[in-house]
Amino acid sequence: MLNISNNSIRDKVKKESVLFKTLKTPKSGKGVAKILLAVTFLFFILLFLPWQQNIRGNGNLTAFSPQERPQSVETAIAGRIAEWHVIEGDYVQKGDTILTLSEVKDKYFDPELLPRTQEQIDAKEGGIIEKRKKIVNLQSQINALNDLLEAKVEQAENKLQQAHYKLTSDSIDYEAAQIQFANQENIFERNKQRFEAGIIALTKYQELESKFQDSKMKLVSAENKYLESKTEVINVEVGITAARSEYLEKISKAQSELNSTESEIYAAQAEITKMRNEYTNLSIRNEQYQLIAPQAGYVVRAMKAGIGETIKEGESVAQIMPEGAEMAVEMYVNAMDVPLLKENRKVRIEFDGWPALQFSGWPQVSVGTFGGVVRVIDRVSSKGGKFRILVTPDPTEEDWPEQLRMGSGTKGWVMLNDVPVWYEIWRQLNGFPPSLYGSPEEAKAGSMDDMEAKK
Image (tube, rainbow, N blue to C red; front, side):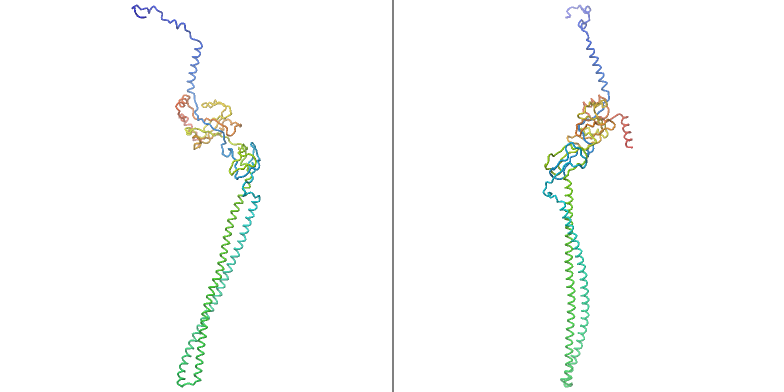
């Protein structure tokens, strides 16, 4: 072994190892090896089995229609609870009385407030009727004054015309008297010179002087009549103006009173409208003392308890769960999964309290889960940055259990396309989103189905 001698002994030593001859393979090891080989073979086979991708989400049960979801019964007025007519769990029809309220505001304490308000309205309406009669009387008075004014003016104008005629006649007489006086004055002056010259007798002179004085008197008399006629014309004109002013003043006063009465009517009508509005509000308020059920359902919760408890306007006093609501699952999914969703996608749902065994990638072998379809996808995110979807029962699968209650928790899987198991493992390890791309045959078939649906 140390190669000290040049003589080799390798050909004289046997090559079989005594140690390996003494060792024997155990039978259990062979079985384990076979099992490991079988498991490995099955694992490789499983890697090529189809796996249905899905989007997971949690949520709870609700009603698909908003009007079928639990409704809060709110009071429209403030009041004090006088009597409860139902208890929790009772079934009520639409219009049934839930509770009775009593008044808490001193403005509405009077039990006869409504009829007294009606009496005030009737009194106001009666006052309007009387004012309308007054308007009719004032209008008649104004018409009578206008007629009287026309008559007075016409009478005065006739008198004025007569005065003008008399003035014309007196002016002619006055002119004639002036001419006659001038002639008599001329005759008297000539005869006066003749009398002074001794041509005519004193008797003749005195006779001429008497005629001269008589013509002078007639001139003065004609002048006075003429001036009186002019004064009469002026007086008649002034009388016309005075009569017109007097009656116009009376007409204006009546017209002002008429306008004032009409203004009072408008004010009374506005007040009546306000009182009618108040009367209607009081009538509606009287109906609000009885809090009625807005729809049929079960009283699931009373927000207020006891008698005499005061509640405010708009405060919730009870909650009603409508009967026969179309159930839906309100499920929340991550924002990155929303682009992969669309309506009518199949969903597998597991309800809290309902035994289930779910294989998310193999829904065919799941037990205790129920089918659904996506009906609504919210266009805005909810609290927490997740998006809400509404899922309703799948009509082609088993009905959902009747024992389900609104608000129960759920788990859901929105089913997507089929991929190999190895691809899904690779995707999960890399954090990639699910794949929506199928084979060309699947895509073509899907497009044909969409065209048929549009037709």
